[in-house]
Amino acid sequence: MAALLRHRGCLQRAGALCKVLPRLTARDFRATPGGPWSRSRGWALRSGTTNYSSSSDVTERLWSVYNHTKNQIDVTLSNSMDPDTIFANNEMCLKDIEIYGFDYDYTLAFYSSHLHTLIFNIARDILITKHRYPEGLRKYEYIPDFAVRGLHYDVQKALLMKIDAFHYIQLGTVYRGLHPVSDEEVIAMYEGTHVPLEIMSDFYGKSSHGLSMKQFMDIFSLPEMTLLSCVNDFFMSHNIDYEPVHLYKDVKEAIRDVHVKGIMYRAVEADIGKYICYGEQSHAVLKKLSALGKKMFLITNSPFDFVDRGMSFIVGRDWRDLFDIVIVQADKPSFFNDRRKPFRRVTDKGALLWDRIHRLEKGQIYKQGNLYEFLRLTGWRGNKVLYFGDHIYSDLADLTLKHGWRTGAIIPELRKEIKIMNTPEYVHMMTWLQALTGLIEHMQVHRDPASQAVVEEWIEEREAMRPQTKDIFNAQFGSLFRTYHNPTYFSRRLSRFADIYMASISCMLNYSLQHTFFPRRTPLQHESPIWPEPSSSGAAAAAAQQDQSNV
Image 1 (cartoon, rainbow, N blue to C red):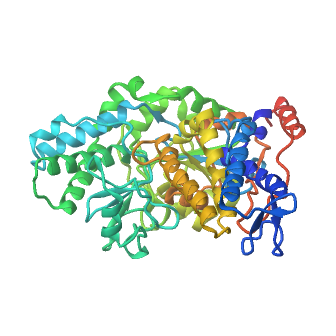
Image 2: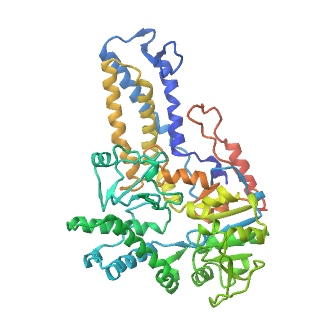
Protein backbone atom coordinates (compact mmCIF):
# COMPACT_ATOMS: atom_id res chain seq x y z
CA MET A 1 0.00 0.00 0.00
CA ALA A 2 2.95 2.30 0.60
CA ALA A 3 3.64 2.22 -3.11
CA LEU A 4 0.08 3.15 -3.97
CA LEU A 5 0.28 6.57 -2.38
CA ARG A 6 3.77 7.36 -3.64
CA HIS A 7 2.72 7.27 -7.26
CA ARG A 8 2.67 10.29 -9.50
CA GLY A 9 1.51 10.29 -13.09
CA CYS A 10 3.98 11.14 -15.80
CA LEU A 11 2.13 14.31 -16.70
CA GLN A 12 2.32 15.46 -13.09
CA ARG A 13 6.07 14.90 -13.19
CA ALA A 14 6.26 16.87 -16.39
CA GLY A 15 4.21 19.61 -14.78
CA ALA A 16 6.64 19.61 -11.89
CA LEU A 17 9.49 20.24 -14.29
CA CYS A 18 7.62 23.19 -15.70
CA LYS A 19 7.99 24.72 -12.23
CA VAL A 20 11.69 24.86 -13.02
CA LEU A 21 10.94 27.53 -15.61
CA PRO A 22 9.99 30.26 -13.09
CA ARG A 23 13.08 29.47 -11.01
CA LEU A 24 15.26 29.41 -14.07
CA THR A 25 14.00 32.52 -15.73
CA ALA A 26 13.91 34.46 -12.50
CA ARG A 27 17.66 34.58 -12.95
CA ASP A 28 17.58 34.98 -16.68
CA PHE A 29 14.71 37.40 -17.24
CA ARG A 30 13.41 40.65 -15.86
CA ALA A 31 9.66 40.97 -15.33
CA THR A 32 7.93 43.90 -16.94
CA PRO A 33 5.21 45.79 -14.98
CA GLY A 34 2.67 43.02 -15.63
CA GLY A 35 4.30 40.98 -12.86
CA PRO A 36 6.08 37.61 -12.92
CA TRP A 37 5.24 35.52 -15.97
CA SER A 38 2.56 37.95 -17.09
CA ARG A 39 0.99 36.52 -20.24
CA SER A 40 -0.05 39.94 -21.42
CA ARG A 41 3.18 41.78 -20.69
CA GLY A 42 5.77 39.01 -20.81
CA TRP A 43 9.43 39.00 -19.89
CA ALA A 44 12.33 41.11 -21.02
CA LEU A 45 15.58 39.31 -21.72
CA ARG A 46 18.36 40.46 -19.50
CA SER A 47 21.88 39.86 -18.26
CA GLY A 48 22.38 41.39 -14.87
CA THR A 49 20.52 44.65 -15.36
CA THR A 50 21.29 45.20 -19.03
CA ASN A 51 18.84 44.17 -21.75
CA TYR A 52 20.20 42.23 -24.70
CA SER A 53 19.95 44.41 -27.75
CA SER A 54 21.38 42.37 -30.64
CA SER A 55 19.47 39.54 -32.27
CA SER A 56 22.42 37.19 -31.79
CA ASP A 57 22.40 37.85 -28.05
CA VAL A 58 18.64 37.22 -27.88
CA THR A 59 18.96 34.00 -29.85
CA GLU A 60 21.88 32.82 -27.74
CA ARG A 61 20.00 33.52 -24.53
CA LEU A 62 16.84 31.72 -25.66
CA TRP A 63 18.82 28.65 -26.63
CA SER A 64 20.63 28.81 -23.31
CA VAL A 65 17.28 28.64 -21.51
CA TYR A 66 16.21 25.81 -23.82
CA ASN A 67 19.34 23.75 -23.15
CA HIS A 68 19.26 24.40 -19.42
CA THR A 69 15.63 23.28 -19.25
CA LYS A 70 16.29 20.15 -21.29
CA ASN A 71 19.17 19.19 -19.03
CA GLN A 72 16.85 19.22 -16.01
CA ILE A 73 14.49 16.49 -17.17
CA ASP A 74 16.41 13.55 -15.73
CA VAL A 75 15.73 14.75 -12.18
CA THR A 76 12.06 13.80 -12.57
CA LEU A 77 12.55 10.10 -13.41
CA SER A 78 11.46 8.78 -10.03
CA ASN A 79 8.25 7.13 -8.87
CA SER A 80 6.16 4.93 -11.14
CA MET A 81 2.46 4.12 -11.14
CA ASP A 82 1.23 0.74 -9.91
CA PRO A 83 -1.01 -0.92 -12.55
CA ASP A 84 -3.06 -2.47 -9.72
CA THR A 85 -4.11 0.90 -8.30
CA ILE A 86 -7.79 1.81 -8.11
CA PHE A 87 -8.35 5.35 -9.40
CA ALA A 88 -11.12 7.65 -8.18
CA ASN A 89 -13.18 10.14 -10.15
CA ASN A 90 -15.45 10.74 -7.17
CA GLU A 91 -14.83 10.34 -3.46
CA MET A 92 -16.14 7.00 -2.22
CA CYS A 93 -15.75 5.07 1.04
CA LEU A 94 -16.00 1.28 0.89
CA LYS A 95 -17.20 1.32 4.49
CA ASP A 96 -20.52 2.68 3.14
CA ILE A 97 -20.93 -0.13 0.60
CA GLU A 98 -23.18 -2.98 1.76
CA ILE A 99 -24.05 -4.57 -1.58
CA TYR A 100 -21.71 -5.40 -4.48
CA GLY A 101 -23.01 -6.04 -8.00
CA PHE A 102 -21.14 -7.42 -10.99
CA ASP A 103 -21.38 -7.78 -14.72
CA TYR A 104 -19.93 -11.07 -15.99
CA ASP A 105 -18.00 -10.60 -19.24
CA TYR A 106 -14.74 -8.70 -18.77
CA THR A 107 -15.65 -8.04 -15.14
CA LEU A 108 -15.58 -11.44 -13.44
CA ALA A 109 -14.56 -13.38 -16.54
CA PHE A 110 -11.49 -12.12 -18.40
CA TYR A 111 -10.82 -13.50 -21.85
CA SER A 112 -7.65 -14.29 -23.71
CA SER A 113 -6.83 -12.83 -27.10
CA HIS A 114 -8.10 -16.04 -28.70
CA LEU A 115 -11.68 -14.85 -28.17
CA HIS A 116 -11.33 -11.81 -30.44
CA THR A 117 -9.79 -13.97 -33.14
CA LEU A 118 -12.70 -16.38 -32.79
CA ILE A 119 -15.32 -13.61 -33.08
CA PHE A 120 -13.56 -12.07 -36.09
CA ASN A 121 -13.26 -15.37 -37.97
CA ILE A 122 -16.86 -16.43 -37.36
CA ALA A 123 -18.29 -13.01 -38.32
CA ARG A 124 -16.09 -12.85 -41.44
CA ASP A 125 -17.35 -16.27 -42.54
CA ILE A 126 -20.97 -15.22 -41.87
CA LEU A 127 -20.49 -12.25 -44.22
CA ILE A 128 -19.32 -14.63 -46.93
CA THR A 129 -21.87 -17.40 -46.48
CA LYS A 130 -24.98 -15.48 -45.38
CA HIS A 131 -24.50 -12.03 -46.97
CA ARG A 132 -22.66 -13.26 -50.10
CA TYR A 133 -19.54 -11.16 -49.62
CA PRO A 134 -16.50 -12.08 -51.77
CA GLU A 135 -14.54 -15.25 -50.93
CA GLY A 136 -11.39 -13.15 -51.04
CA LEU A 137 -12.21 -11.85 -47.56
CA ARG A 138 -11.01 -15.16 -46.10
CA LYS A 139 -7.41 -14.05 -46.54
CA TYR A 140 -7.92 -11.42 -43.82
CA GLU A 141 -7.00 -12.42 -40.28
CA TYR A 142 -7.69 -10.61 -37.04
CA ILE A 143 -5.14 -7.86 -36.28
CA PRO A 144 -4.84 -7.71 -32.46
CA ASP A 145 -3.12 -4.33 -32.26
CA PHE A 146 -5.03 -2.46 -34.95
CA ALA A 147 -7.90 -0.76 -33.07
CA VAL A 148 -8.48 0.52 -29.55
CA ARG A 149 -11.74 0.82 -27.66
CA GLY A 150 -13.68 4.10 -27.71
CA LEU A 151 -13.19 4.94 -31.40
CA HIS A 152 -15.91 6.50 -33.53
CA TYR A 153 -16.97 5.18 -36.93
CA ASP A 154 -18.52 7.46 -39.52
CA VAL A 155 -21.08 5.15 -41.09
CA GLN A 156 -21.63 7.35 -44.16
CA LYS A 157 -17.95 7.88 -44.95
CA ALA A 158 -16.64 4.50 -43.72
CA LEU A 159 -14.00 6.19 -41.56
CA LEU A 160 -12.70 4.98 -38.19
CA MET A 161 -11.26 7.70 -35.97
CA LYS A 162 -10.51 8.93 -32.46
CA ILE A 163 -12.38 11.96 -31.15
CA ASP A 164 -11.48 13.96 -28.07
CA ALA A 165 -13.66 15.20 -25.22
CA PHE A 166 -14.45 18.40 -27.13
CA HIS A 167 -15.64 16.62 -30.31
CA TYR A 168 -12.42 17.28 -32.23
CA ILE A 169 -10.92 14.59 -34.46
CA GLN A 170 -7.35 13.72 -33.60
CA LEU A 171 -5.53 14.14 -36.89
CA GLY A 172 -3.39 11.14 -37.73
CA THR A 173 -5.96 8.72 -36.30
CA VAL A 174 -8.46 8.63 -39.18
CA TYR A 175 -8.50 5.36 -41.13
CA ARG A 176 -10.31 4.25 -44.26
CA GLY A 177 -9.93 0.51 -44.31
CA LEU A 178 -6.45 -0.32 -43.06
CA HIS A 179 -4.84 2.88 -44.33
CA PRO A 180 -4.62 6.36 -42.79
CA VAL A 181 -6.43 9.29 -44.35
CA SER A 182 -4.32 12.41 -44.85
CA ASP A 183 -4.92 15.37 -42.57
CA GLU A 184 -5.76 17.52 -45.57
CA GLU A 185 -8.48 15.14 -46.74
CA VAL A 186 -9.97 14.89 -43.23
CA ILE A 187 -10.11 18.68 -42.89
CA ALA A 188 -11.72 18.98 -46.32
CA MET A 189 -14.38 16.33 -45.57
CA TYR A 190 -15.37 17.76 -42.18
CA GLU A 191 -14.61 21.41 -42.97
CA GLY A 192 -12.13 21.36 -40.12
CA THR A 193 -11.69 18.82 -37.36
CA HIS A 194 -14.77 19.47 -35.22
CA VAL A 195 -17.62 16.96 -35.32
CA PRO A 196 -20.97 18.71 -34.69
CA LEU A 197 -23.20 17.38 -31.95
CA GLU A 198 -26.03 16.64 -34.39
CA ILE A 199 -24.05 13.90 -36.14
CA MET A 200 -22.41 12.41 -33.05
CA SER A 201 -23.55 9.05 -31.69
CA ASP A 202 -26.49 8.94 -29.30
CA PHE A 203 -26.26 8.61 -25.52
CA TYR A 204 -25.31 4.93 -25.70
CA GLY A 205 -22.78 5.44 -28.50
CA LYS A 206 -25.11 4.08 -31.19
CA SER A 207 -25.70 5.35 -34.71
CA SER A 208 -29.45 5.95 -34.81
CA HIS A 209 -32.13 8.52 -35.69
CA GLY A 210 -30.04 9.92 -38.52
CA LEU A 211 -26.80 10.12 -36.52
CA SER A 212 -23.88 9.07 -38.69
CA MET A 213 -21.34 8.33 -35.93
CA LYS A 214 -21.12 5.07 -33.98
CA GLN A 215 -18.88 4.82 -30.91
CA PHE A 216 -17.39 1.44 -30.07
CA MET A 217 -17.27 1.27 -26.26
CA ASP A 218 -17.40 -2.50 -25.71
CA ILE A 219 -14.27 -4.64 -25.50
CA PHE A 220 -16.15 -7.13 -27.69
CA SER A 221 -16.27 -4.41 -30.37
CA LEU A 222 -12.54 -4.69 -31.20
CA PRO A 223 -13.13 -7.55 -33.66
CA GLU A 224 -16.03 -5.60 -35.18
CA MET A 225 -13.88 -2.53 -35.84
CA THR A 226 -11.16 -4.68 -37.34
CA LEU A 227 -13.61 -6.54 -39.57
CA LEU A 228 -15.15 -3.28 -40.82
CA SER A 229 -11.68 -2.02 -41.67
CA CYS A 230 -10.67 -5.25 -43.43
CA VAL A 231 -13.80 -5.38 -45.60
CA ASN A 232 -13.41 -1.71 -46.50
CA ASP A 233 -9.79 -2.44 -47.38
CA PHE A 234 -10.78 -5.35 -49.64
CA PHE A 235 -13.38 -3.33 -51.54
CA MET A 236 -11.04 -0.37 -52.04
CA SER A 237 -8.02 -2.46 -53.06
CA HIS A 238 -10.15 -4.25 -55.66
CA ASN A 239 -11.88 -1.07 -56.88
CA ILE A 240 -15.30 -2.45 -55.95
CA ASP A 241 -18.07 0.11 -55.64
CA TYR A 242 -20.06 -0.43 -52.44
CA GLU A 243 -22.47 1.33 -50.10
CA PRO A 244 -20.79 2.02 -46.71
CA VAL A 245 -24.11 2.03 -44.84
CA HIS A 246 -24.93 -1.49 -46.09
CA LEU A 247 -21.47 -2.68 -45.12
CA TYR A 248 -21.81 -1.30 -41.60
CA LYS A 249 -25.21 -2.94 -41.11
CA ASP A 250 -24.06 -6.29 -42.50
CA VAL A 251 -20.98 -6.39 -40.26
CA LYS A 252 -23.09 -5.36 -37.27
CA GLU A 253 -25.56 -8.17 -38.01
CA ALA A 254 -22.77 -10.72 -38.46
CA ILE A 255 -21.22 -9.78 -35.13
CA ARG A 256 -24.64 -9.95 -33.48
CA ASP A 257 -25.19 -13.44 -34.90
CA VAL A 258 -21.95 -14.60 -33.30
CA HIS A 259 -23.44 -13.72 -29.91
CA VAL A 260 -27.20 -14.11 -30.30
CA LYS A 261 -27.09 -17.45 -32.10
CA GLY A 262 -24.80 -18.87 -29.43
CA ILE A 263 -21.89 -19.61 -31.77
CA MET A 264 -19.36 -17.87 -29.54
CA TYR A 265 -20.86 -19.29 -26.35
CA ARG A 266 -20.62 -22.88 -27.59
CA ALA A 267 -17.04 -22.41 -28.76
CA VAL A 268 -15.93 -20.96 -25.40
CA GLU A 269 -17.74 -23.62 -23.40
CA ALA A 270 -16.06 -26.33 -25.47
CA ASP A 271 -12.55 -25.08 -24.57
CA ILE A 272 -13.01 -22.90 -21.50
CA GLY A 273 -9.35 -22.99 -20.45
CA LYS A 274 -8.28 -21.53 -23.78
CA TYR A 275 -10.50 -18.50 -23.51
CA ILE A 276 -10.88 -17.56 -19.80
CA CYS A 277 -7.93 -16.31 -17.76
CA TYR A 278 -7.28 -14.73 -14.32
CA GLY A 279 -10.13 -16.76 -12.82
CA GLU A 280 -8.41 -17.27 -9.47
CA GLN A 281 -8.21 -13.50 -8.89
CA SER A 282 -11.94 -12.97 -9.42
CA HIS A 283 -12.60 -15.89 -7.10
CA ALA A 284 -10.43 -14.32 -4.40
CA VAL A 285 -12.37 -11.03 -4.56
CA LEU A 286 -15.72 -12.81 -4.27
CA LYS A 287 -14.49 -14.89 -1.34
CA LYS A 288 -13.20 -11.78 0.44
CA LEU A 289 -16.51 -9.95 0.08
CA SER A 290 -18.49 -13.02 1.14
CA ALA A 291 -16.32 -13.61 4.20
CA LEU A 292 -16.96 -10.05 5.32
CA GLY A 293 -20.72 -10.47 5.06
CA LYS A 294 -21.33 -8.36 1.96
CA LYS A 295 -24.35 -9.09 -0.21
CA MET A 296 -23.58 -9.77 -3.87
CA PHE A 297 -25.53 -10.01 -7.10
CA LEU A 298 -24.84 -10.67 -10.77
CA ILE A 299 -26.58 -8.92 -13.68
CA THR A 300 -25.34 -9.99 -17.10
CA ASN A 301 -26.55 -10.07 -20.69
CA SER A 302 -25.02 -13.51 -21.22
CA PRO A 303 -27.17 -16.69 -21.08
CA PHE A 304 -27.20 -18.95 -18.02
CA ASP A 305 -25.44 -21.98 -19.54
CA PHE A 306 -22.52 -19.80 -20.64
CA VAL A 307 -22.25 -18.03 -17.28
CA ASP A 308 -22.61 -21.29 -15.35
CA ARG A 309 -19.82 -22.92 -17.33
CA GLY A 310 -17.52 -19.95 -16.88
CA MET A 311 -18.24 -19.35 -13.19
CA SER A 312 -17.83 -23.05 -12.47
CA PHE A 313 -14.39 -22.79 -14.06
CA ILE A 314 -13.52 -19.61 -12.13
CA VAL A 315 -15.04 -20.42 -8.72
CA GLY A 316 -16.35 -23.99 -8.72
CA ARG A 317 -19.71 -25.70 -9.07
CA ASP A 318 -20.97 -23.98 -5.91
CA TRP A 319 -20.44 -20.47 -7.32
CA ARG A 320 -24.12 -19.57 -6.92
CA ASP A 321 -23.73 -19.84 -3.13
CA LEU A 322 -21.70 -16.62 -3.22
CA PHE A 323 -24.47 -14.57 -4.84
CA ASP A 324 -27.74 -13.46 -3.31
CA ILE A 325 -29.29 -12.79 -6.74
CA VAL A 326 -28.31 -13.94 -10.25
CA ILE A 327 -29.92 -12.36 -13.34
CA VAL A 328 -29.00 -13.52 -16.86
CA GLN A 329 -29.95 -12.25 -20.34
CA ALA A 330 -30.84 -8.95 -18.66
CA ASP A 331 -30.76 -6.97 -21.91
CA LYS A 332 -28.78 -4.03 -20.53
CA PRO A 333 -29.07 -1.09 -20.95
CA SER A 334 -32.83 -1.60 -21.45
CA PHE A 335 -32.83 -3.40 -18.09
CA PHE A 336 -32.14 -0.06 -16.39
CA ASN A 337 -34.87 1.89 -18.20
CA ASP A 338 -37.72 -0.34 -19.41
CA ARG A 339 -40.27 -1.00 -16.65
CA ARG A 340 -42.33 -3.41 -18.75
CA LYS A 341 -40.24 -6.59 -18.69
CA PRO A 342 -40.98 -8.84 -15.68
CA PHE A 343 -38.49 -11.27 -14.19
CA ARG A 344 -38.77 -14.89 -15.22
CA ARG A 345 -37.30 -17.83 -13.32
CA VAL A 346 -35.00 -20.25 -15.15
CA THR A 347 -34.40 -23.85 -14.11
CA ASP A 348 -30.93 -25.38 -13.95
CA LYS A 349 -31.63 -27.00 -17.31
CA GLY A 350 -32.64 -23.71 -18.93
CA ALA A 351 -36.42 -24.14 -18.88
CA LEU A 352 -38.46 -20.96 -18.41
CA LEU A 353 -41.13 -20.96 -15.69
CA TRP A 354 -44.36 -18.99 -15.91
CA ASP A 355 -45.00 -18.12 -12.23
CA ARG A 356 -45.12 -14.50 -11.05
CA ILE A 357 -42.02 -13.41 -9.15
CA HIS A 358 -42.79 -11.97 -5.70
CA ARG A 359 -39.24 -12.05 -4.37
CA LEU A 360 -35.76 -12.65 -5.71
CA GLU A 361 -34.34 -15.66 -3.90
CA LYS A 362 -30.79 -16.84 -3.35
CA GLY A 363 -29.95 -19.95 -5.34
CA GLN A 364 -32.45 -19.18 -8.11
CA ILE A 365 -31.69 -17.95 -11.63
CA TYR A 366 -33.74 -15.12 -13.15
CA LYS A 367 -33.96 -13.86 -16.71
CA GLN A 368 -34.65 -10.35 -18.05
CA GLY A 369 -36.67 -8.19 -15.63
CA ASN A 370 -35.93 -4.53 -14.99
CA LEU A 371 -34.14 -2.46 -12.41
CA TYR A 372 -37.27 -0.77 -11.08
CA GLU A 373 -38.73 -4.14 -10.12
CA PHE A 374 -35.31 -5.17 -8.77
CA LEU A 375 -35.25 -2.12 -6.50
CA ARG A 376 -38.82 -2.76 -5.31
CA LEU A 377 -38.13 -6.40 -4.45
CA THR A 378 -34.73 -5.87 -2.79
CA GLY A 379 -34.75 -2.32 -1.43
CA TRP A 380 -31.13 -2.03 -2.55
CA ARG A 381 -31.04 1.65 -3.37
CA GLY A 382 -28.63 4.54 -3.45
CA ASN A 383 -24.97 4.77 -2.52
CA LYS A 384 -24.85 1.61 -0.43
CA VAL A 385 -24.69 -0.32 -3.74
CA LEU A 386 -21.52 -0.55 -5.85
CA TYR A 387 -21.84 -2.09 -9.32
CA PHE A 388 -18.86 -3.12 -11.46
CA GLY A 389 -18.92 -3.35 -15.25
CA ASP A 390 -16.70 -2.86 -18.28
CA HIS A 391 -19.15 -1.01 -20.55
CA ILE A 392 -19.29 2.68 -19.66
CA TYR A 393 -22.74 3.16 -21.22
CA SER A 394 -24.59 -0.15 -20.91
CA ASP A 395 -23.33 -1.00 -17.42
CA LEU A 396 -22.75 2.27 -15.61
CA ALA A 397 -24.33 5.39 -17.13
CA ASP A 398 -27.96 4.89 -16.10
CA LEU A 399 -27.01 3.63 -12.64
CA THR A 400 -25.08 6.84 -12.00
CA LEU A 401 -27.47 9.32 -13.60
CA LYS A 402 -30.86 7.86 -12.64
CA HIS A 403 -30.48 5.54 -9.69
CA GLY A 404 -27.65 6.85 -7.52
CA TRP A 405 -25.68 3.61 -7.27
CA ARG A 406 -21.91 3.87 -6.97
CA THR A 407 -20.12 2.53 -10.03
CA GLY A 408 -16.77 0.88 -10.75
CA ALA A 409 -15.42 0.59 -14.30
CA ILE A 410 -13.21 -2.32 -15.26
CA ILE A 411 -10.73 -1.09 -17.89
CA PRO A 412 -8.31 -3.92 -18.78
CA GLU A 413 -6.35 -1.62 -21.11
CA LEU A 414 -5.17 0.35 -18.08
CA ARG A 415 -2.54 -2.21 -17.18
CA LYS A 416 -0.79 -2.02 -20.53
CA GLU A 417 -0.97 1.77 -20.74
CA ILE A 418 0.38 2.27 -17.22
CA LYS A 419 3.30 -0.05 -17.92
CA ILE A 420 4.12 2.05 -20.98
CA MET A 421 3.82 5.27 -18.97
CA ASN A 422 6.29 3.85 -16.44
CA THR A 423 9.03 3.36 -19.05
CA PRO A 424 11.96 5.81 -19.02
CA GLU A 425 11.33 6.47 -22.71
CA TYR A 426 7.78 7.70 -22.09
CA VAL A 427 8.62 9.67 -18.95
CA HIS A 428 11.54 11.40 -20.65
CA MET A 429 9.49 12.17 -23.77
CA MET A 430 6.45 13.54 -21.91
CA THR A 431 8.49 15.53 -19.43
CA TRP A 432 10.43 17.26 -22.18
CA LEU A 433 7.27 17.80 -24.24
CA GLN A 434 5.58 19.53 -21.32
CA ALA A 435 8.66 21.60 -20.56
CA LEU A 436 9.02 22.58 -24.20
CA THR A 437 5.36 23.60 -24.27
CA GLY A 438 6.02 25.78 -21.23
CA LEU A 439 8.96 27.43 -22.94
CA ILE A 440 6.86 28.19 -26.02
CA GLU A 441 4.00 29.54 -23.92
CA HIS A 442 6.16 31.94 -21.97
CA MET A 443 8.64 33.01 -24.65
CA GLN A 444 6.11 33.71 -27.40
CA VAL A 445 5.58 37.19 -25.92
CA HIS A 446 8.87 38.29 -27.50
CA ARG A 447 7.79 39.63 -30.88
CA ASP A 448 11.20 40.55 -32.35
CA PRO A 449 12.14 38.47 -35.44
CA ALA A 450 15.09 36.72 -33.80
CA SER A 451 13.00 35.52 -30.83
CA GLN A 452 10.12 34.50 -33.07
CA ALA A 453 12.46 32.42 -35.24
CA VAL A 454 13.68 30.50 -32.20
CA VAL A 455 10.16 29.93 -30.88
CA GLU A 456 9.09 28.69 -34.32
CA GLU A 457 11.85 26.08 -34.18
CA TRP A 458 10.55 24.97 -30.78
CA ILE A 459 7.00 24.73 -32.16
CA GLU A 460 8.23 22.55 -35.02
CA GLU A 461 10.05 20.29 -32.55
CA ARG A 462 6.90 20.01 -30.45
CA GLU A 463 4.79 19.10 -33.47
CA ALA A 464 7.33 16.45 -34.48
CA MET A 465 7.25 14.92 -30.99
CA ARG A 466 3.49 14.67 -30.61
CA PRO A 467 2.98 11.68 -32.96
CA GLN A 468 5.52 9.78 -30.87
CA THR A 469 3.28 10.19 -27.82
CA LYS A 470 0.53 8.48 -29.84
CA ASP A 471 2.55 5.72 -31.45
CA ILE A 472 4.04 4.49 -28.18
CA PHE A 473 0.58 3.21 -27.19
CA ASN A 474 -0.87 2.18 -30.56
CA ALA A 475 0.58 3.04 -33.95
CA GLN A 476 -2.83 3.77 -35.48
CA PHE A 477 -4.91 5.38 -32.75
CA GLY A 478 -2.71 5.98 -29.70
CA SER A 479 -3.92 5.92 -26.11
CA LEU A 480 -7.42 4.95 -25.07
CA PHE A 481 -7.45 7.89 -22.66
CA ARG A 482 -5.80 10.83 -24.45
CA THR A 483 -5.45 12.53 -27.76
CA TYR A 484 -2.22 14.49 -27.95
CA HIS A 485 -3.12 16.51 -24.85
CA ASN A 486 -6.90 16.46 -24.39
CA PRO A 487 -8.81 13.58 -22.81
CA THR A 488 -10.52 11.35 -25.35
CA TYR A 489 -14.28 11.16 -25.69
CA PHE A 490 -13.97 7.80 -23.92
CA SER A 491 -12.16 9.44 -20.98
CA ARG A 492 -14.82 12.09 -20.70
CA ARG A 493 -17.53 9.44 -20.36
CA LEU A 494 -15.43 7.38 -17.97
CA SER A 495 -14.91 10.32 -15.63
CA ARG A 496 -18.63 11.13 -15.69
CA PHE A 497 -20.13 7.67 -15.20
CA ALA A 498 -17.58 5.80 -13.03
CA ASP A 499 -16.86 6.70 -9.41
CA ILE A 500 -13.77 4.49 -9.50
CA TYR A 501 -11.97 2.58 -12.22
CA MET A 502 -9.31 -0.11 -12.35
CA ALA A 503 -7.60 -2.61 -14.65
CA SER A 504 -9.35 -5.65 -13.16
CA ILE A 505 -11.58 -6.61 -10.26
CA SER A 506 -8.51 -8.16 -8.62
CA CYS A 507 -7.34 -4.64 -7.72
CA MET A 508 -9.89 -4.79 -4.90
CA LEU A 509 -7.60 -7.27 -3.14
CA ASN A 510 -5.13 -4.46 -2.42
CA TYR A 511 -7.56 -2.43 -0.33
CA SER A 512 -9.30 -2.71 3.01
CA LEU A 513 -13.08 -2.52 2.88
CA GLN A 514 -12.74 0.50 5.15
CA HIS A 515 -10.75 2.37 2.49
CA THR A 516 -11.83 5.75 1.17
CA PHE A 517 -10.94 6.59 -2.42
CA PHE A 518 -10.12 10.25 -3.00
CA PRO A 519 -9.85 11.78 -6.47
CA ARG A 520 -6.66 13.74 -7.00
CA ARG A 521 -7.22 17.45 -6.67
CA THR A 522 -5.45 18.37 -9.85
CA PRO A 523 -5.53 22.12 -10.38
CA LEU A 524 -8.04 23.65 -12.73
CA GLN A 525 -6.62 25.88 -15.43
CA HIS A 526 -7.14 29.01 -13.34
CA GLU A 527 -5.73 27.47 -10.13
CA SER A 528 -2.17 27.26 -8.89
CA PRO A 529 -0.86 23.87 -7.72
CA ILE A 530 -0.35 25.03 -4.15
CA TRP A 531 -1.07 21.77 -2.32
CA PRO A 532 1.78 19.33 -1.59
CA GLU A 533 2.27 15.92 -3.11
CA PRO A 534 1.57 12.91 -0.82
CA SER A 535 4.49 12.54 1.57
CA SER A 536 6.45 9.43 2.41
CA SER A 537 4.98 9.55 5.90
CA GLY A 538 1.51 9.34 4.38
CA ALA A 539 2.57 6.34 2.34
CA ALA A 540 4.00 4.70 5.44
CA ALA A 541 0.73 5.27 7.25
CA ALA A 542 -1.12 3.58 4.41
CA ALA A 543 1.25 0.64 4.56
CA ALA A 544 0.63 0.31 8.28
CA GLN A 545 -3.11 0.32 7.68
CA GLN A 546 -2.79 -2.47 5.13
CA ASP A 547 -0.93 -4.60 7.65
CA GLN A 548 -4.02 -4.54 9.85
CA SER A 549 -7.13 -6.65 9.40
CA ASN A 550 -9.11 -6.17 6.18
CA VAL A 551 -12.32 -5.54 8.06
